Figure 1 (cartoon, helix red, strand yellow):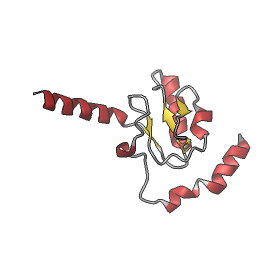
Figure 2: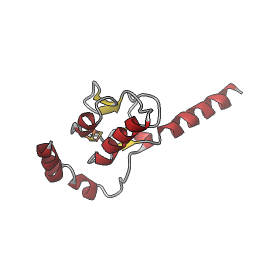
Figure 3: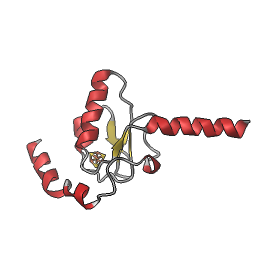
Length: 114
Ligand code: SF4
C-alpha cells in the first residue's frame, strides 16, 4: 500500500496542480456505466486503481478501462469508505452529486410527458 501511495505522490498527484480548473468531479462528464445514484466517476479517471483498492465493494473497472461506481453505498460505514475513495482520488474524478442528475432527468421526463 505504501508503494502505491509513493507512486501516486510522485506521478499523479501533481495532476491537481497542472489542471487548476478542475477541483471536483464533473457531473456533465459522468460515465454512463456508473450505477444510478449519488456517487459516480467522471471521464477524467486515469485508472490508477486507488478507489478499487480502497472500496472494492463500490468501485470496479469497466470495459473501457475506467473505474465506475457499480454499487452505491447506502449504510454509514459504506458511505465512509466511498468518501475515503473519493477524497483519495488523485484526479478528483469521483463525484457524489449524481442524484441531482437523476432529479433533473426525471423533471425533463415529466415535462415531455405533459
Ligand atoms: S476514479 Fe480516481 S482513484 Fe479511481 S481509478 Fe480513477 S483516477 Fe484512480
